[in-house]
Image (cartoon, rainbow, N blue to C red; front, side, top):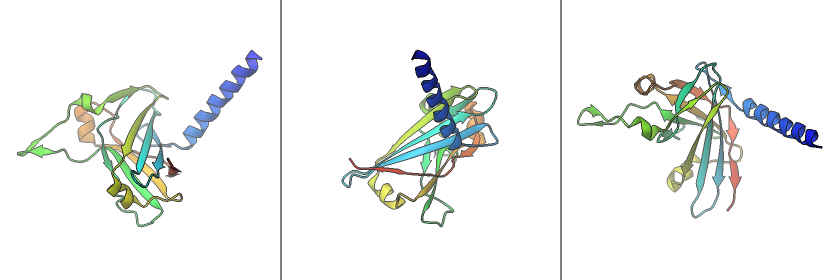
Length: 176
């Protein structure tokens, strides 16, 4: 009985990993990205919960940034109403004050060292009603998420840099 339970648990773990890997898309830079989103469709306070998985596909450790990132939901370059391309990362030029770059503390960006075949997770809550109304999400909307860290910021912080995009996925809709 104990052996059957162990086999069952092992099978579940393998299947879960296989499904997660099937939803990933690996970049040339050794990072595979997958994502999922849940839309809480409460008409008084809609919320979008975004989860991005960063999987290290290299044979060495890499450091990724996971907090206080820039989120771009502007969907540039997509003319199809059923497609959204979102960008998460630190790839925009920095903020300046009186002509000087304002650099964020590395600790505020929560760097995570991931070993080969390990992953870091980024979570983000969007509760801006105006933004959510602008997105026009439906059950058929195909979303891709691009995790992007510019080479300037990557070299400054000593982290992974480049871009990696998830395979398209659909938002899960839930009512409160």
